Each structure stands twice: as structure tokens, then as C-alpha cells.
Length: 221
Image (cartoon, rainbow, N blue to C red; front, side, top):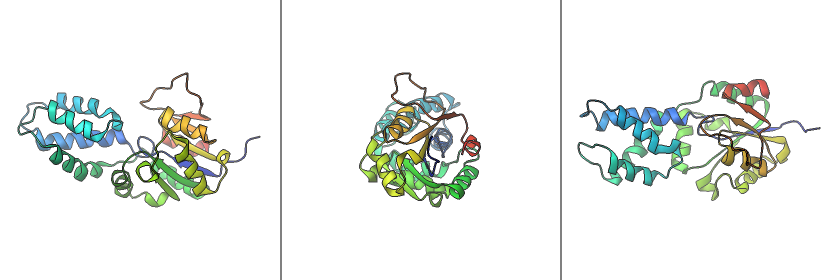
């Protein structure tokens, strides 16, 4: 018989925060600022969305590709593009549908936390822009943790912070390897939010539940 769940731990990007829509909105703003000389910006928009790899590409690599490939009227330097991104990207942070209701439900009924890969300034900036930092008892960002998902150590750090046995924690995320396999290897139960990342049959772990929308958590938990 499985022990009852005492803690729910979330991924951030494309789990709580709609990272795909965030970058899309940022891209539209970026194109309006720098590419209003073009008759149509759709090809540039499509290329930027493709190059971004939904946030899984190193930012410096992305910036170099954008500078090299895009039809600039006046080409930016790497430093100027990095400054623009740092200043403007976080402004476009947006929650997944019904995320506020889900977080409120979890906070009332369970211990809660968040684990996210990324840089401190960007990830904490997103949380502050959304006003949800206080929704979690703890937040682990890979830059400050010194290790990133799917490394089991970052999940063990979360377990240690909560002082709750791993089998009484459930982890919610969208990435089959970084989230589901990583958390499972740490002994947690998992819920996979099916999105852009396809499931591979050779993965070592299987989620306890698979959902298509974050809002489905309220019925499951």
C-alpha cells in the first residue's frame, strides 16, 4: 500500500509558467522593435521560435545565431542583444492556464516546492514577475544548487529541505528525462504533463499519472 502524498514539487518552465508562449510574446515584441523595416516578420518569427529550442539552447549560442542569421537593418552586438534579452524577456512571463488555482489548492493541502534548471536572475525574475515566489516553501535553481536536473542530487536536496520521505513526494513536470526520470531515480512519485517532449520507450521510469493540462492536478490530488 502506497503512503499518502505529503509534498508536491513542481518544475517551472512549461509546467507552471507557459515558457513557449512567453518566448513567443517576447519574439513579437522584439521583431516590432528591431524589424519593422520588413514587409512581413513571420519568417523571422518562425526561425526564432525554431532556433530557441523551447529554451533548451544556451543563450549565448542563440544570440550568436540570431545575430548571424536575421535580416537586421542595423546588426546588434552580442552585448546589446544580451542586454535587451535580460531587460525585456522576463516582462513576458505568463502562467499556465489555471496555475493560480492549482498552486492555491496545493499550498492549502500539501507541502510544496519548485526545482528549475537555469540562471538565478532569470528564473527568480520569472517567479517575481508572476508574483508566485511565496507559493512554494522552497525554490531550487540549478545555478545556485550547483547541479541540474536530471541529476538525482538536486531532487535529494529538495527532499532534505522538506524532511519528507521521497516516496511521500510527488514531482510534476513536462520533461520525460529531466523531470520524470530524474525525480523517479530519487524515489519520488511523478506526474508527467504531456507537452512538446515525446516519451521514449527506453526511459527507466514511468509516471504515476499523465495529464495534458495543469488543472487536472486538482482532481488527482
